[in-house]
Structure formats: structure tokens, C-alpha cells
Image 1 (cartoon, helix red, strand yellow):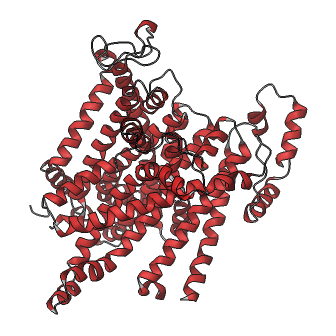
Image 2 (image 1 turned 45 degrees about the horizontal axis):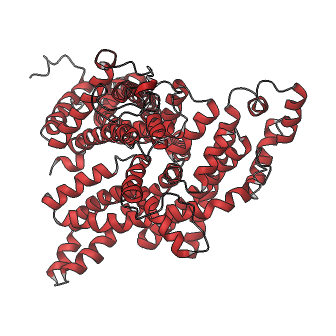
Image 3 (image 1 turned 180 degrees about the vertical axis):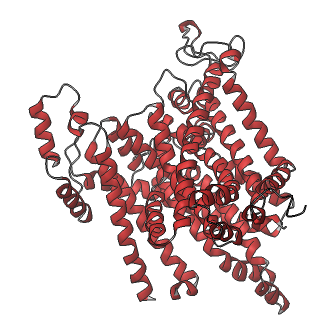
Length: 298
Length: 313
């Protein structure tokens, strides 16, 4: 391709083309069996959650006192709980809470944390120093404790749960976005952009952001797994979305109270949580191997 | 060496101040009047005003902040709103249980994680390595309360090897240990998984260094090369993860304590949440942060012991 036919500005022409890097990483991830199995698990749970209103055999809140604590089988494929509610239907509806809370919390954390890290690294100097110090303080709280306290103080509902989980994940996203920004701002294509008089906003969004997205996205997959776990833990403690809305953590807790005679009430939702977290970790792990520059040349 | 220690300990002071400030801010950000939150909507204005005065909420914000800092640094966190006893005494009574649990879980993680990680690194891409990677992925995907429930079902209810109720007599070492095994293994599982992974990659990196080849070339026995030359140089990332993970262990100990019905900080925090024990929550936050700052400082000190180059920087 000749320089004349290249419609991109010179600065953009020197920038490493991100789509190719993405494609390479995806191709590598696709050839990794762990990633594919993980992706299948996540996809199946996502489908179950989206299709819950159509495929759930019963109403998740419907109580049939005559059918209390039935073991799996028959009219109720996975049995019923102490109020005679169908476990399978409640698991399917619970997946919606698990996925929507963790996806929105991580999306918020990714945007806010990513922006903080990118801008902080780009500006540098004392601003960067102070911002990162604040992030370190935030990071020194264990996410469960921070989430616990924020939900406890704000009151347990869907929005507060999302805010609490997002808050615990902002600092790691800031760190992961900052590190490559520090390296990128010294690169020739950023300096060329600056020499051409591009605004800082344009450099940040058009030249730096595309080059840090893969790191940030991998981080998001791994943190999604943590978010699912924290949401389930908070629901287990009793700080999740209020009953009768089915949540996996809440179902585990209810089942735990009947563990002596109806163990499946606690183990089935527990297995659901484990499966989703495992699936997300498998995907995140494969993506990290595929995008990690240290491992790429092996 | 002493200079290094002192400097590192002093470095923890700003962090501690920042964390205390964050706690102060979080508690003050809560929407609504804390007095009304504690007393409920039906409280008379006089009762609310009296409680505000008792909590010091009627004073200017900077005065509240300074007295909060001063009290926190002298270990005075006020009295529980529910029991009326000093928070430090309430926490101190159960803290040994939580520390037992966290330390035991950490030891379990290290004892399992380091050898398995080294083993996997030495058999890279062979069956053992693949098995270790898959198992560790499983291990770190288990929410603590789920693994706790499974452990309880199998080992306490099915095989009856361990007690279901976990309140140990602190003065009886055998009882203390017996009731600690199951919760500690449950809590340590995730840590073992993390340490396996970090040890594996750190060992892979250090074993490919030139000094390893030199050591082998001059005839150092392979066992010694791995455990001394290899592991010593892989120890920094391992210590980092252990240090980071102790904080997460403290968080997860809340869940473990609920599942195994053990006394500890977790039980107190859940009780305080349910009863809106506002001063207790604030005190607990400070105590958790203090523990984590201490762990971070110890991790930093360990760096200096393990790698003399760190002391110079």
C-alpha cells in the first residue's frame, strides 16, 4: 500500500493496528480447549438467563405447600424448596440477577477505573502519584468487606449492590489501564500526534484507548468472575437482592438451613455459582494467555 | 537492615491515615440521619438529638474527624450500640478464633501451593502440569461458602470425621486444632490454587535464567538447584501473592465463620449489620484495615529479607 492511498493521518499510520492484534488473540484463544469449554459454559448460562421466562417450567415465586421439599424428579426436575417452589425455575431466574448485577458492576468499574487509570497515566506527575495512592488505599480493602459495608450502609437493593461491587473493582481497572498508558505515551505515534496538534482528548481516545482495550477486556472477564462470587457471597450473608426474588446466594442460604434432610437445596445453587465462576475464569485465563506479550512468543 | 525496617514501618503510617480517612468518609456519606437509621422512623426528635450528642454527630465535621483519628490511634473505638460494651473488648474476645483460622488457611495454602506449583513447573505441559492447572482453576472458582457446604456435607455429615459446630475451647489445643481443620482447609483452598499458579509461573521464569544453567554446569545437585537457586529467586512473587491474599482471606473468613458456625469477626460483623450497630461497624472497618496494613508492612519487610537488593532502593 502506498503512502498516498493511505487515508489515515500519518500518526494513525504509525500506530500498531489494534484489530489485527485482537484477531490474533481471538484465534489463539479459540484454539485453546479450556477457553472454548469456558465460553460454552458461560453461553449456556447466559441463554438460560435470557430465556428464563419461556423455558422455566414453573413460576419461580409460585408456592405449592403440598409439594414442599420434594427431591429432584417428576414434575419438578430439580426438586422444590421449603415453600414448594420449583428449584430449576428459581435457578434460571437467579441467573438473571447474577449476570445482570455482575455485568453492570464490571461495566461501570471498567469505564470509571479505566478512565481514571488512562488519564492519570497520561497526565503523569503529582496528579498521577496522588490518584494512584488513593487507588492503593481502595485496593487495600478486601472486596468482600468493602462490598459488605457499602451495601450495609446504603441498604440492600439491586442498584446499591451494583454500586458496591463496582466500587471494589475500580482500583484494579485503574492500575491495569495506567501501566500500558505510561509506556504508550512515550511512543512515536503519540508524539507524532502531539506534534500534529491533536487535542489530548483525540490522542487519548483514538490512539491510546484502542491499544489498551485488550488488557482491560481480559481484566474485565477475570473480574466478572470475582463480581459473580461477591454478589453470591453478599446474597448468602443476606445482603443481596431482597426475597422473594431468587438469587443463587440466597437460595444456597435457604437451603443451608435444611441441609440435614434436603442437601440438594444448598448444593444445586452452589454448583450453579461454581459453574458460572469457573466458566468465566476459564475464558479469562485463555484470553490472558493469548494477549500477554510475555507469553505470546512462546 | 534496621534502618530499612524503620523506614518501611514509617511508610505504613500515611496508608493507615488514608484508610482511616476513607472509613470516616464512607460512614459519613450514608444518606439520611444516622440517628434516625439507628433508632428507626418512629423516634422522637429529642431521642434523636440525644443520640446525636452521644455519638458526637452534633459537633463540626473537622472536630469529629480529629477525635475519630485520635480515638482510632489509641485503640478507642467507642461502645457497641447494642451491648454497650467497648468495641475493642468485644472484638478482642473473638479475634483469636479469626486469627487461628486465617493463619491456618494461609499455611495450608502455602504448604499445598508451593510444592504443587514447583512440581507443575518441572513437568511443564505434561499431564501433571495440565492437571495442576485445571485443578487450580477449579480451586479458585469455589466461593468459600459453597466449598464449605460441600466439606460439611462430606466430612461432617457423611463421614462424621469432624464436628459440625465449630466453637472451639481456646485452652484445649487438641480441640482447637480438631475444630480448625475443616474451616481452614475450606478457606485455604482458594489460596492454595492461587499460590500453585504463581509458584508455577515464577519457577518457570527463574529456572530459565542463566545462573540455573551455570549451577547445573558446575555440578550442583538438581534438587538443590530447584529448591535453593530456583525457589529463592521465585520467592518474591510468591510472597507478594501471599501478602495480597491474606487480606482476601480475612474477607472470606466471614463466610467460613458463618458456614461452620465459628465465633470470630465474621459473626460480629453480621450481627452488627443486622442490628444496625453503627459504631461497631465503624470500629470493625478500622480493625480490618489495621490488620491489612500490618500484613502489607510485614510483606514489605519480607521483601527486604528475601532480596537484599530491595533494601538498597
